[in-house]
Amino acid sequence: MTDRSPFEDFRALARADRPDTAAAVAATRAREAQLTKPAGSLGRLEAISEWLASVTGRAPPAVDRPRVVVFAASHGVADRGVSAFPSSVNAQMLANFREGKAAINQICGAYGIGLSVFDLAVDVPTGDIAEVDAFASERDTAATLAFGLEAIANNVDLLGLGEMGIGNTTVAAALCAAILGGSGADWAGPGTGVTGSALARKAEVIDLAVARVAGETDPFILLQRIGGREIAAMAGAILAARSQGVPVVVDGYVATSAAVVVHAMNPAAIDHCIFAHRSAEPAHARAMAALGVEPLLDLGMRLGEGTGAALAMGLIKAAAACHSGMATFAEAGVDGPA
Ligand SMILES: O=C(O)c1ccc[n+]([C@@H]2O[C@H](COP(=O)([O-])O)[C@@H](O)[C@H]2O)c1
Ligand SMILES: Cc1cc2nc[nH]c2cc1C
Image: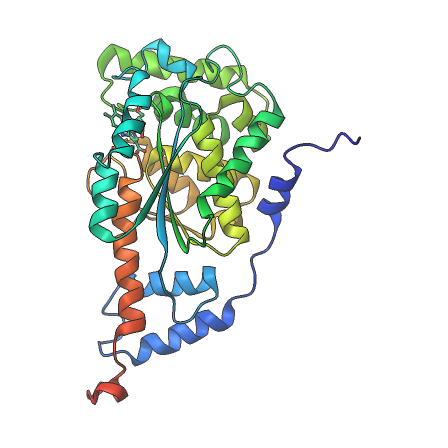
């Protein structure tokens, strides 16, 4: 037996170059210029088509099997009063997803997007990160990263990442603070609706978690020590999707914290991700600024469960449909610019 780290495969994925897709990008750019519209008039939709081509290597880009994946997990830290809701909501919302009655079911239904929901043992919370590590071992953490691979099963060609986990805005904040710097107060926000003195306590809990890991810089070890399972699974899904040329749509603050972990391994390792929306959770903008990304939407949403991602995927589907379905000037007999 060697003492090879269980994280080694994920480190390799984070470091790997993506395949060369320059030909698909060039073909997409050339076709875009021929379509029946003034150059640039579809604005960011044109950039989305080019992004799809650059990630998938397909020209014209197509979205045939979009899917939102929701990872659900429970957090020991939720018992510290950092959320407006109890952890019992996690299992109850899983039942609601199964019944097709949550917001994410409706948005996916409206846009023809598949939905998978994974229960990452919501009956077993991870450790209370103010006092102990979230995951018991590197092996446990790596197993959950590996579970993220499930997200791209069955030839998913556009992946939306969402989550459900009472207390996880505290976990996301602690991860952001530990990786990007700043205090608990910089990264804390209302989450499900925490305000006033409870919000101040939430910031203190984040500070406790960050102080506990002081000096640690390895992003995967920080993931192990701060968690949680849904964030680890989303980080694993981001890495797996990149290796398979699957474009990823990142939802809100919590999903973005998974991207922060991957980005800390290698900034280029999130170059196949697009950020769906600016969550109303105030620190989400701060996290995206640190990643140097600009979200597609700003609708004042702060639900999680992949809802922002699903809305952005509707836009992305429309962008691909315009690019591949529109006639060229020559095909339609429309005069070009004078
Ligand atoms: O991702 C976001 O931007 C976001 C912002 C606020 C709340 N949430 C959702 O609300 C839960 C976490 O909030 P909290 O207050 O329990 O930490 C969890 O289920 C998330 O999906 C998610
Ligand atoms: C009801 C409810 C639904 C959610 N969906 C995602 N996070 C959530 C948090 C709560 C509290």
